[in-house]
Length: 354
Image (cartoon, rainbow, N blue to C red; front, side, top):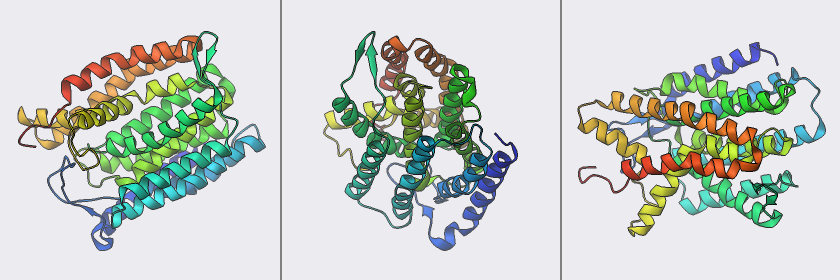
C-alpha cells in the first residue's frame, strides 16, 4: 500500500476543512444552538464534506497501489459503497443547509442500505452459537434495519467535539488491525486501503473538530461515515476477515447509548423524533459543566473517556470475538453489559436546567 497518498488524504482533508470554515458564513452553513446542541454559540457546520471529498479524491490513488490486483468482486463492492454513499451525503448536505424532513432522510437511508445489501448478495452468515446460524431472510431483514439505524445513530452521537471523528478512527483502524492479525495478506488489500483512507481523512478533519471545535461535522459527514462503516463491515465479513460480533463490539458505545436513550424516550412518551439532550454522553458533558469544568474541558473529557473505553475494553473484546468466532455473540453481550450500566447510570431524563 503506498504511503504518500495517505499523507495526501490527510492534507486534502485539512485544507478542505479550513476552506469550509472560511466559507461557512458565506454559504449559510452555520449551526445555531438548539435543544439537542451541546454548544452555546453559532458554529460552522458541514465540515464532514471535507471527509467525503478528500476520500473520493484519494482512494483511487491508494487502490492503484494495492496488491494483489483488484479482483472483480472486490471492485464490485467498493464501487457500490462509494456510489451509494453519494445520496447519503447529498441528503445530509441538504439537511445541513436548509433542513430535510425526517421521513425523507429515513426513506433515503432505507433505500440506499437495501440497495447495498442487494448489490452485495449473497450476504455473509451470522453464527449465533456453536453450530447455530441465523437463517438468511431474518438476517437480511435484520441487517437492513440495523444499517438504517446505524447511519442515524452516527448522526445522533455527533454532539460532542471530536467524538464522531474519534469513533471513526477507532473503528476503521481497529477493524484494519484485527483483519491483518487474522489474515496478514489483507494489509495491501483494497478494502483495507479504503478503511485506512477514511481514517486519514477523518484525522485531517479532527484537527479542526477537536475541542474547542472550530467546525462541526454536520449530517453530511456523520451519516456518510455511518453508511461507509456499515458497508465496510459487510465487505470485511463477506471476505471472511471479521465477523458481525466483532463489528458490533467495536460500535458498542454508539449502539448502546442510542438504543437505550431512544427506548427511554419512547417509554416516557416523549417526542423522540424531536431534538434533545438525553443521550448519556450529553448528560456526561452537562454533569461535568455543573462540577466546574468549562465547555472545552467537558467535551475533551467525554471524548477521551469514550476513546479510553474503546481501547481498553472494547478492542480486546472484539479481538476475543474474532479469535473465538463460535462465541462471538456471547462475547458481544458480555462486552455490552458494562456499557448498559454506564448509560443507565449516566443518561436518562435531562436535568431541569437543560
